[in-house]
Image (cartoon, rainbow, N blue to C red; front, side, top):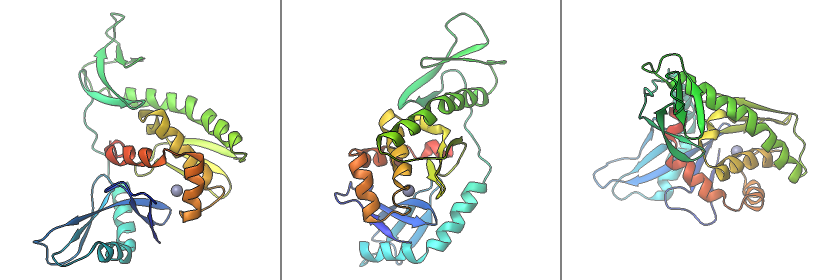
Length: 243
Ligand SMILES: [Zn+2]
């Protein structure tokens, strides 16, 4: 368990706590009315530390670090919580490749299709929740597009991978096993291409460094100079993972 700060911190986006294999974003908030340090895990998976009057950011960080096992338990609970997805109906907006798209009735005049940006999705009942059909469609796109990109970037960086799997994960964008299996969240297809590339490169760089040490981050920065912007984008859209 350790903290990492980016060399040039983005305000509010630079702090992460390693909890097991996860990197949990941490926000430190000063509250003059607070009497003690308080750690909370938000529903979007961001940890929030309240710093009381007279407290310091350093002590706030240390406080979160001391409660990492509590955070790990809360993260597990969050994972196990049944998702209560918002209903997706015509007119609803969602992210696809980093752009907000509105769900429109199919332009080909057929009642059984919904237009999602450039994608035309077949559905059986246009008045029902469109989410299952659309998620399935987006997941298929992710399964088609993400693994070849991993192969491409791995080759570029002369890394060998065993397998790429595209999965439905509620609390992480990707992971990398010691044996060289890269797992990616299908929801990456909802993020812009540079964010997809960052997550893929992040996981690939774990083949060189199985940790989040400064050396690991130097590898990430060399492979993906815009990684901080990508981290910030992900932080600002962390509700994507929660659905
Ligand atoms: Zn990592």
